[in-house]
Amino acid sequence: MIISKVKSTYTVTLQEVKTHLRVDANNFDDDDYIENAVIPAATRFCENFITKDIALTTNTYTVYDFYSDCLRVDEGNLQSITDVSINGTLYTDYELKTYNDHFELEWDNYLGGDDYTLTTHFVTGYNEN
Image (cartoon, rainbow, N blue to C red; front, side):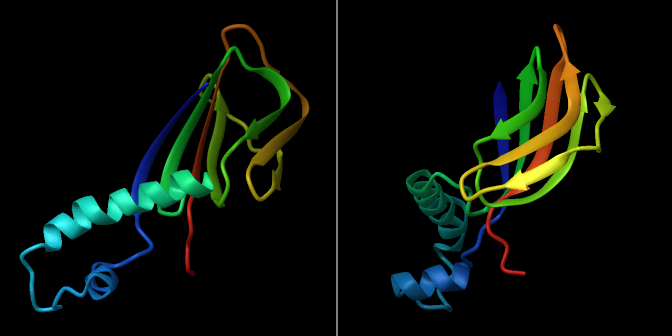
């Protein structure tokens, strides 16, 4: 199994961090550093501590030689499932069960077999809306 992650939106803003660090709002010298280094590093630290994504994250989860009627993904803070496919064929007839620290997809029948690759795209993280 392979999982890849791409962070898109962080839950803390530049102004919130500047206020917390007591950096003058009119001082723009370190904005790039705060946005591109401090916020991502602090978010990663917190995510590693709680073992869940905080920043909105696009995930690709790939399982090779998949053959089962269920899939458990150890990712919390699930926002949505984008798609589920085996060897490029989309599967939409599944039951989604969400838990605090993982989610499960269940099908009525076994799917896959030797040389079958299951790919799931989903979004995790915290969304205020």
